[in-house]
Length: 86
Image (cartoon, rainbow, N blue to C red; front, side, top):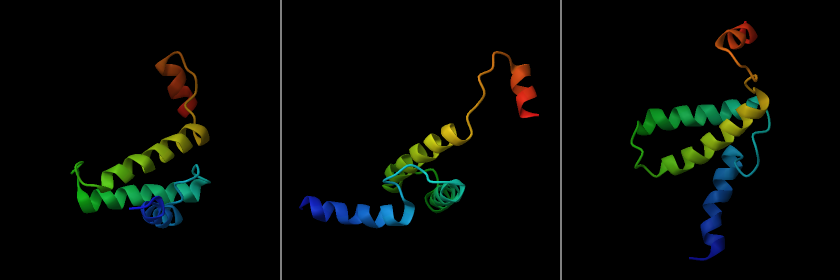
């Protein structure tokens, strides 16, 4: 199997989910979250299923976006974190 043959499925997945680049915005973030939710609904917690390799990639993209878009404040106490969240 050639590299081109192996990359064809990736091009389809990337076109559907946009995984070759970081999450673009809140809409893209919501689309990826919906994909994760549907995958868990369909395949349960069977981490041996091949879809979970893709899930890990999607989860990494989601985590990276959330860390940049919604960073946790640098706090030294639980009280200051609660104050920030209020």
